[in-house]
Image (cartoon, rainbow, N blue to C red; front, top):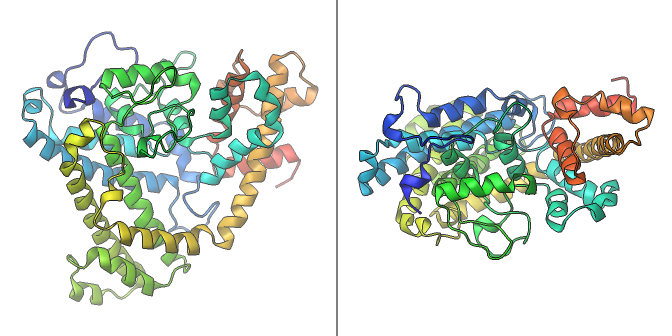
Length: 446
């Protein structure tokens, strides 16, 4: 892979080539990506979507919006630090007009969008959608779909849904947000289709990154960027865009450290654990006098968190640059943090978060509620939408469809497109809106 291709400013529908040296430095194309994402309705909905604690009323617990903003900030730092060293190593990029901040802007935008396709109620929301089709009433549609279409549904994937949010055209809106191909490439952590499932142990094959409906555009993006194909025959898959490693690292750093911080602030993890676990990440940078002057738990944890994130950022940049040539050749099958000098410490932190936070009673209870809500919404809307298109709608079906926003009322011919259309609608609901819609359908007054 070559950096000048990987940093493509092309957008869906472009007929002329966009050159970096012709860009207006007061509003770069990569910065436009960030703006379009942050002003989108899908991004705004993240303010009421679960990060760890579903439907939490606690003001200091992170939701998907605050998490995405923090991942974006970390991603920007990673991108700039890597960009500085890449430009020193590949000086011809400077002659083409590229600057250190371009790398930061691309990674920041992709990181900002990294959770934009996640359904309500966290990762359990993804599982709930998949299980509706795999073992629920959605199983009745299986015979009408191809194997890959069916796999898209039973393994519903937030990353693939995010790609649809950013790129799928709809009536009057070509290319959705029309994000630059460089940013789309950095966004695609898993540049493959849903089958074959986990064909290798490579990190890029862990999940999938696009639905069958988006295959043609995905291939166009991958080919424009010069991504390396790694599948044969009719199966489609590519090695990662190098900057996707930085987006992933930013997410890994934030959820490892900040979910841990949330657990401490909620009282689910004792403060003593913070010192025991975080000190291993910050021992070379901590100012012990300053630390002991901090009088509140929140301030102490905040100080350690900031130092820990800084340590992990510097280490991720080091791993990236040490392996840059292998990454460009498609020969780096790991995440950056898998090769971090702090991998043992990160695993310790994640393990205690899983035990004390992710599996705490409040989280489990809300996940159970989320399963019920999503299953009910999918069943009612998939049935009503499909029956209407088939000319078999009951009066109840007609009434239910009136709850759909206007942009989801357009008919789809293929059964796969119909089902994915409703999954897309449900996935873009906030936790609160999903609960409200469920109560309406179930006839609950509150």
